[in-house]
Image (cartoon, rainbow, N blue to C red; front, side):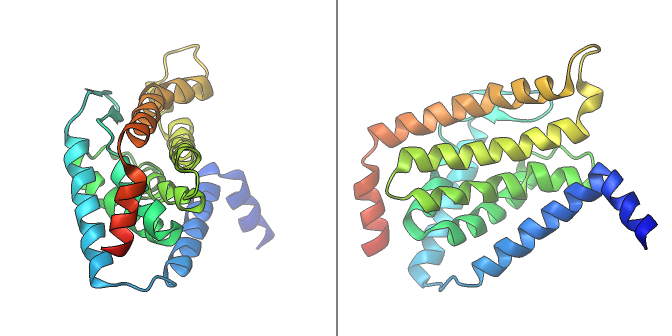
Length: 204
């Protein structure tokens, strides 16, 4: 038994699988607290659909995945701000599965977890900062970046040019599209009447 435990600990993929499993279990337990209403379900469906449409409008797309969109993450952030992190996690999970169908880049099942459901679930963390939407958007997108960064380090080593650090490569690669995505989202949050829109979502 100790030998099996040692083998698991020494295998990065096993550790990542355990982390991913624990995150998913914790998130689903947390999501059980959600009390769905017809209005909420309709709004979730509309925001997910809007995120899908915005994701299809690519300002630029990287060869190994990742793209800059005109605010593709904003609808998921709005759901998190409006209904809190639990609903944000659920919405992100659903969108992550749709994004996998819409724009798949698959190397392994574990890589799929860290590039699709988990990063978009991470956007739900913005719901903890609904009183400061700029901080919330930053936290959510940075959390998404961390998921993609881990995936890049563990699964995309074969794409790294010889002599280049895998950590630097993953950092630069993921920052090259997520930093512009963050900036676009922050600009839209500033320019659009977001607080009024959130009020309408909650009370309409």
